[in-house]
Image (tube, rainbow, N blue to C red):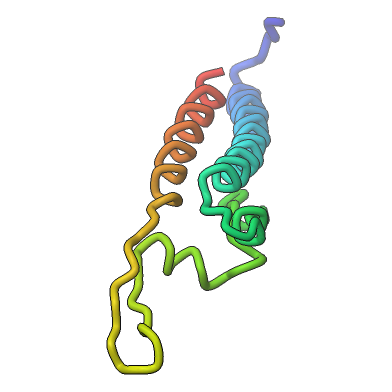
Length: 130
């Protein structure tokens, strides 16, 4: 609805409009962060190796509010050191001797990260353009 503003009140009216827009964008961005975190956890549970099920089922996320907005961290709570080893490969000891053999990487985090980042960017652009 159009609002008639005097020239003296123009600055206050523009400030009010910008504050409303900032609030809407912050709220929308927070929703995008939550959506991306949830989708990332679901995707990682599906693409992770599941020999025992403990690793694949251990993915979770936490969302923190900071000065610059909401941030999400997706991590494996069940096996916190294992994602790096699986993603990048490692060397294991072969038997009782000092012979080591490389264990190949099982890349399953990077593709999910790329997919989730792209979806997050699209969602945030949509929020900004509303």
